Image 1: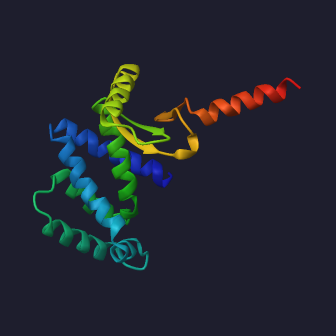
Image 2 (image 1 turned 30 degrees about the horizontal axis):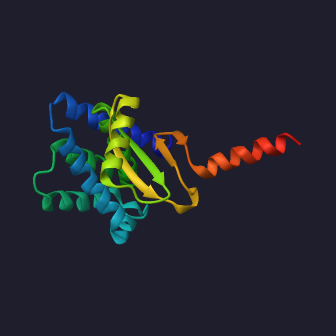
Image 3 (image 1 turned 90 degrees about the vertical axis):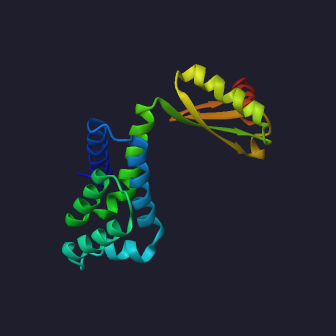
Length: 183
């Protein structure tokens, strides 16, 4: 099993447990994210917790200490953290966080989108684009607006793996292709 596959399985199990126990899924995600971010952001801690020369029992001790210092962690997240330490799989934490977030967003009918324009858009235009994407997808949209002067004008929207390219640069490329095909 790949690391990505294992992370997805752990995330699915945590999500299903939190859902079955009627826990606050956002809080569960926040607790999971806090541990994954700590793991990602602390080079020394990450080296210790992923070092194969350090026995799993010592890693569990570190995990227990981190849990003791964290107040009010969802029990399922704490159990997962300890389980990963026991099985020497703490390196999966960032992948579990990302997979849990994707599952949570799907459950909440939220999709991430990016819109790239040549110049910054005013807030009302960003809101209009968000509403248009919401109508098109039937889901709430978390929209990230980016600026890339190289697209000259127009916009490029990305929703998941789908790209809607209405940029002037792309239109010029199509025009160039059609003119070169004609000769």
